[in-house]
Image 1 (tube, helix red, strand yellow):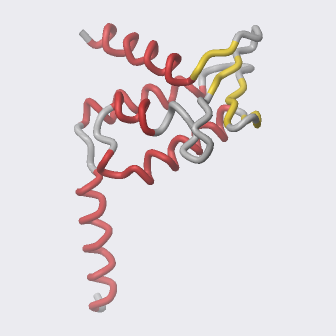
Image 2 (cartoon, helix red, strand yellow):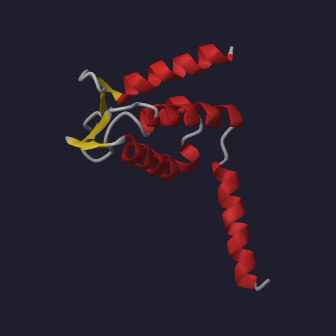
Image 3 (tube, one colour):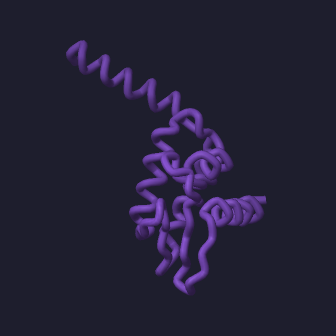
Length: 120
């Protein structure tokens, strides 16, 4: 391997290790992200615009990645990634197929309680 290749590989491995979360917390976050994709007919509302579940998940994953090592728990994920726009500070919302709308923070908090109860 060339020196530059070794440097890049070591940088990637170091970065990955720094951002590593506890396995249980990662499972809790994954559950929340997966629950979003299971919402049939739901719309994710961010800054007044509507997005499908795939776009919402992608956006939240980008925020999670950007948060890096600062986001270590599912509660931090909800608070710092899934509650509001970091630009406008407007709350993120989910409009369900039946028309009712909830803030994503409330939805994810309820889903997290569901996950924790099922795992105990």
